[in-house]
Length: 462
Image 1 (cartoon, rainbow, N blue to C red):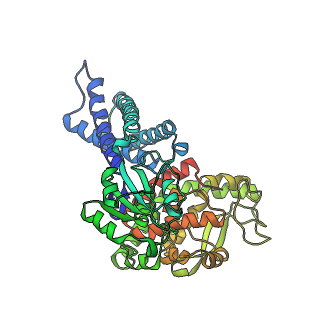
Image 2: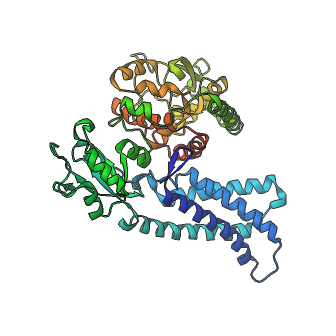
Image 3: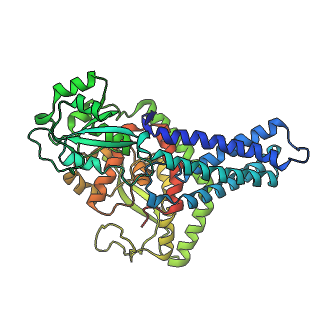
């Protein structure tokens, strides 16, 4: 893993981006060579270089937006062929639009067909080789876990369904007075020392996963291992790096005090405000026809007397309440019995509402909230006061998600499906805290780009 602007990126996927971007560049460049193999080319060397750069950049961004470089996708969610086809269709539409707007860089359809064909075949071959070799044990970091109880057991289940897992746990050391719950195949009961065990198993990293650090921490042995050259990290850092979350099972007040991140205000606030205004303006310019058609559809379904928009009280930055604006997707009397979660196949959702919720179109009026400064384009989703009051009493550190402005989209929306229970809220809170801790413009842009995947795949909508 490599950390870029406080956000962890998989080295394997970073190399995949570089390789496939180069492949896309070569596909356009040599696609022109193939088209004009027996005739003289219409294009100069500079023409093809510019065309190849545009083609490579657009196709790479479309693949990013469809989640093709997101390692946290499981095999069940991935669906490589479908995502690749959609990303290529989006790239073709974008490239053709660029050619229409800038005729001086227009490339013929025949050359584009060759380029798309070469790029698609090249990408399929590259992906086959990547998934074949990226899952080899020899290429994964070997990890030794200190501990054998609940936290170690949970660590063992980490990333089992991910497409690319960058590590392999070789064993869990059971310390004296510790009740083991991990499987016997991973359990290391007798050992000479931690450093000796690490050398014996040829580990690259040691992770501490003790249920009680104060009583069980073997400081002398860990110091010996550290001075012997082994990398040592706690489970908090491991979860943050590997899953992009702040683990609530491991968090402590002292960790919050001494950890890096959680910086707000100053230049960061100014940059984010400018980013919000620019992003929202661009989204409004693109989406206004969709919003107009949505308003018309709601009007035709519900009649003139019923409202098109829906205002709902939510909790914002520093726990300040505000009214969020959305397209109405439920019946007028949807909450006659009080506030409640949206459920699968919710009978309160209208026919138009079901479609706009699936495509997240109902969220578009929140652009107005962003312009007013009540929301940001990217941030934790704003929650209702009725639920917040209950969560703050039951869930530790829940109030910390309100340190930043809520957003139209967010890190938790990318990494976890729709939450409709207290358990789901706890899981999403871990991703929200990661965002609050590691916020950067780079992370915001990454979340925005990957939001296209959420919209097109309808992930987590109800």
